[in-house]
Length: 338
Ligand SMILES: Cc1ncc(COP(=O)(O)O)c(C=O)c1O
Image (cartoon, rainbow, N blue to C red):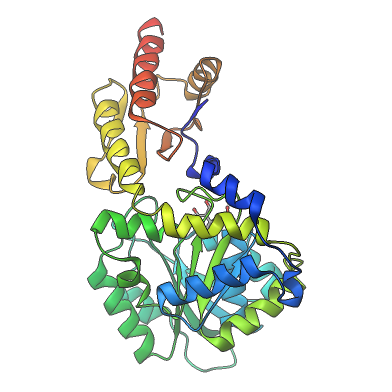
């Protein structure tokens, strides 16, 4: 299958499968799993945080960050398009009694500082207490500018807010800018990073923060049923995601640029090339093309995509340049036949 639906579909590499088979394990709820401890210590060191926590998913890492920064009746500011607002089942409100205050995302993925300022509530019994600013990078495949991150951090600091990064794809953001990931994460009190997307681990994310935050998050992880036992099986592969898979993302970015250029040449498909910055391509499809029927026909040829007026294509380790060429040729063939 050539699967464009997401980079979450990546299979573990051969080195990951070997590491899994040899992983030393223990009961991680007792703190006894050497492979989990190694991953958490390595990640904390690598990014310059006190501590790190291995979580079962990106959703869980974000939720734990929100619940560790905020108390019942607090609120967090985030983008309307933020994954931890729009696509995580309202977990912060449902499970944390934390109110989201979503704000408009600009075309580059940022949120206007003036919008953030205006949304910070005064200390008044009528309002939720504004505690946290949550940003995402990459967001919709776009890299949020470094200068923006610096000014958002300065504003958060000035207004007494903590600042969290949903860095599910922070490695993509770093590779696209040719900078170390720490250049991005330096602006944040906490960061969640998905190891199971472009970085190919089968399962898991990491949450970075200070001692107090990670201790609190570890407690909430247990409460939410996320205390895993011999999780070293997963952590051994997740470690390789951070040590061996980051630079490879450049290939996915090149492939996305190639795919975007090819799609843009096809009648009925429109791609805003300025938005193609990492491993995602959004193609607006004209009304005459029935994307549901198209997706079904492509599926029969071993190609998977999510239909819609705008189709999101995601490139990843299990999609080669040849796969893209094959897809474009099949697509053209199907469109000609109508
Ligand atoms: C930006 C972003 N954050 C968080 C997540 C959640 O990750 P998970 O699917 O591991 O819960 C995703 C998942 O696609 C994501 O794209």
